[in-house]
Length: 298
Image (cartoon, rainbow, N blue to C red; front, side, top):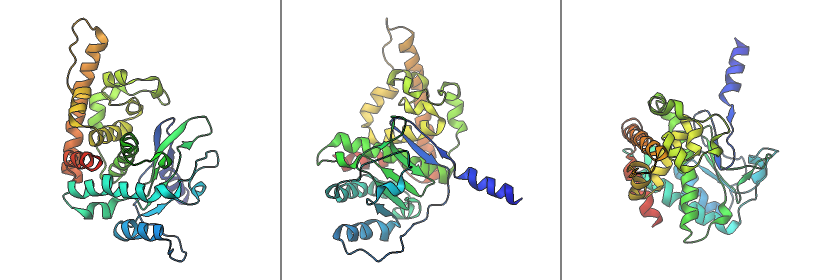
């Protein structure tokens, strides 16, 4: 019995690795704040982070000693001090405030489910095999934000890329806590997922043909779910509609065009599934969340 319990504990902490511009996640454990047993800092930056994140949401923003949070076969550059507060302000503006407005619980939702730690890295995580990782969601407890040193005021492309990754990672945390019914996606695209490690061979057109919004979404049903949510939140609805929903005119275009349109029908089905799931199971109006996010960055 003791061996079985130990084995179950080990398996529950197993890490699912993702290559290139992907993310990583671990299986769910209850998110709990993790505070270092050391005197409170009087540094103005640390005081700000404590007042805005730790006190209301139980979340510690970690920007120092970054190599404590990465594996020995990886490396990353720490963030420049001057970007930490602007990035933290963006986290409030483009993540916390939109969720507070979209949740039927208001601020109570994120006070319960916001990750206990947010690690800010200045660069991507460089893996030992030459690939990079853009985001990590660890057991619902920690989210890692990368490439903070690329931040600049008005750099909307950086903001969209960064928060697309953050919303993707938080979708995993939502899934871990509210148990999305993966069968709903498998029933739509079960035969269309790629084998492990081969998603990098896909392009946007082939991903759409498979019923996914990105090549990375083809890698697994969980990533399909998280990518779809992240793209719904961070994409102008007219652009999303034109790219992923509206059929192309396939006159004289051949089978590939017809396949993309079939894939768009699958994306529409999944879109309806995740909007319903977020509203009824999680208590989040995904379309309100999208509108609030887009307003926040504009």
